[in-house]
Picture 1: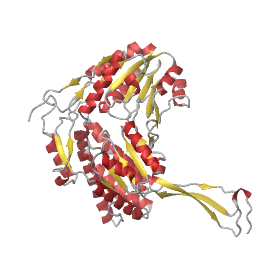
Picture 2: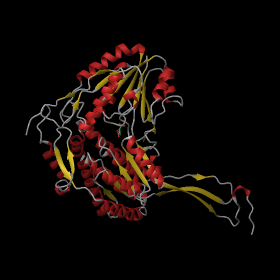
Picture 3: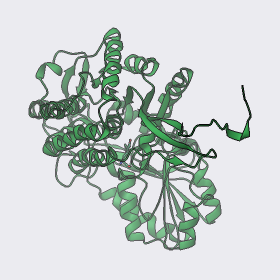
Picture 4: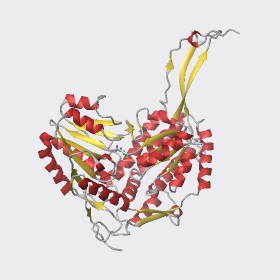
Length: 516
Ligand code: UN1
């Protein structure tokens, strides 16, 4: 056992073990398996999770399909009761699961807890929604007819999630899918299996309570498939999975989307972002500083909504940038479990390498780089802490147009508002965006059709940290999917248009005559 600048190595495996026990996960689930769980805080190994074989994965999906056939018959508000109980379990275990999220994903404590709060929020949302799966009644052109639409359960919902929101993204999909009458099959990130085990255990507790209350829930309503890419492919290719919601890189989406399209399955894709903020001459710079700091450095730059491009108007450039640099210099980096830390570790060595690669490309493109170096590496060879990087660059080129999943903020000076709107949209991703301004015209233009082309567009708020009530997702290479709030539930159901004739004649639409 060595001591690093951050903490004692090998202290976290024991704590993870205790947390998993309290969350109801049997030790045999995370010992002796092939999938290695680590904590990025120290790099230490926290578990060995059993991977599922290909045949067992196929069989699990088949069982989930059988479960769907039963679950779809349970009235939606009763399905909502299961999700209500899941929300209760999450509330009761918020501290433990939040802590485990921090250990496994390296998030600071409040963000680990925030992730669980996001799960609780979507459960509440879904419970209410379970009584609001409304269709329309539509005026028909035929007398003594009624036309309406019904929303029916869809089938097995596949969920592929990423390390950075290891459990919240599952919950956005699971809570909606379950109240919509679907069964769920989850392929969690290989980097975060312990939080997936814990989440599975909490759902099982909710299921037990649901059954004890007399609820009818089939076995295999939910399955978690631990494994690598091959297991994800089985989920994507399985004929009994009509919908896959996949969160990850654009590269992953490029593989998943055509395979789903080939069998006409639906996709909800949440892929890369390259989120920007525009800071205009009238912006409240105190508020902007806080908004930019959280969005760019928070979660160590590992949110899909992380702020990656900052457009500063020339009139405030020289006042704002020095303030931002001071924030970058003074931000507390280190053990995310310690009070006061704002920036925890990168997830692994590969993340560090891709950050360094992007920074050297930025230098080659004429960028001036501040920060970005590895810190706190003494003793913790397998832990990757970095000082978040600020890159002053004059052109939107090279690494600026790509998503690097690390805390790098490219800063670009602008003069003309319409030109910066164009530059803002001139990347291939379209997830989230913001403008900092007190000019009503600029704010409204940014939100208008000629403004941001992203799925999320904010005023005087950074691009990250969305609430669950709105639909979450983005355009272009972000994949077009929408999850969580608003009417995102519709993607988890199928719509049937019903026309009923309660008369004694058979008028045909469009005046067609066909008298036999
Ligand atoms: C993600 O990074 O994959 O808006 C999701 C946010 C969070 C979700 C991020 N509510 O930043």
